[in-house]
Length: 603
Image 1 (cartoon, rainbow, N blue to C red):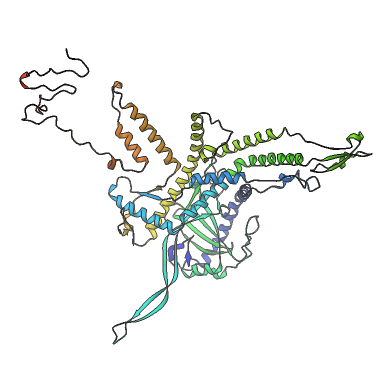
Image 2 (image 1 turned 45 degrees about the horizontal axis):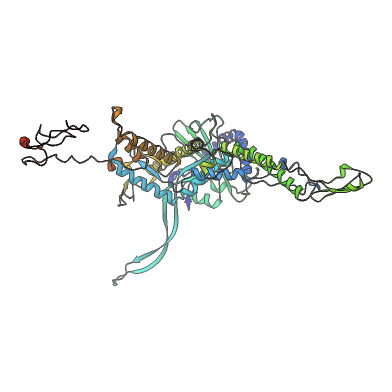
């Protein structure tokens, strides 16, 4: 049995309050109806974005292609250009192996080893939770629909495990052995759920995730799973829940869930905390208590992201909405050109007849039409104009260039080439690449902020619900049991430590700075010294290398001479050293040359 989502107290029982709980139903339904008013419009947008992403033809796209004889041969191709652009953008934004980095609280460097241990535990929890696969769906939904939401909750699961049971037997040295299946908790950790935005609603007055006062989240459960959670003390009144007939298939795109129960969660801000109300089939209240989670005061366990935000809106602008018109223009241009090619390859013919009826002419490859005229021209082919092919191809390149410009996935960022961009100078290419890359980095930062919030929620849930002591590993892989009380009251910083476009750009800038300064350090005529150490520190930090381990103090200079020895090197006594660039002298002036300044001939 697995418990997630409302969590519902982590196995804590509560007193049955059927009458009081049912009193909360009218207000719950009023809040739900109010939130649904704007949500219907958003669902229509989500469905439209999904159709654009899938490259589905709308009825008006085929309006010119009637089903008569002339329309049967016309081209109606619809390549998914939007799909290709979003997939390319997804590949640039999504890290191959996202790794969380946990830093100690500010001003407490002594907790560095503890932070490393919690980092190892957090990444281990994510591996068990298939975090990589889940977060990829979050990125795709955000690009495809303009907004995505992730719920962070606590999950635990029991499973039947066969164990050896040893029973002592009187008079025998060897105990009796038997095998029994017992319920064992196989995991007990935080988990994330990528929410379908069609199942997430909020109060209409909210203009940002921070201003949400009431949030609704819908799931679909079986009656058996609800009974199991009631047995754990999480829900009540499950026996009164009726399966089916909950109106969940009234919109296009929804699958038939007649054998499932529609379950709504309402997370609402109250003066004393977050109130969690869970209603099944919009008729039975199964839970009405304070939220079991305490996240940074009064936070709900949901994290939103909008890669292309809109002013004072939680949902942003989706990629399909930005380039849908260009995709339709590409379809029309391509199909018109293919129709023209078909006419060139299969010319229609005109034949002489006593009566001419132009309405009866058939414009199709190989068609025969009857005409009046000279007997020499009784039967003749019609050749369409082929000069329109080049303008059509040129227009297609222009449209694709517009799509790349709007989406930010230009060929130099995605690794391909196109003839629509001037490639004659490296400066032009660098400028185009930099502008597009910065747009991608802006979107990447939005996802990084969301994942940082998810990581903080996971640490807070560990602080609240994990056992007092959990197994962990230190910086070098050594066992280090984690004391949960060590993180209570400490705000650890969580961020994505994996490779990203932002990190790559920082490395390029640091390397360029290092190369530029290296050429200036040999020019003393500027009258100043370049602080090379600061530049090297920034260079090493861009590669996550500790500068203190790489930059060490130089050894002391070797002595210029040895005291007490005549001839040879000069003495190291004060006042007896030889100036730099001078030739050392020998005692008594026995034919020794005078000191010669560097760069000047002897007199």
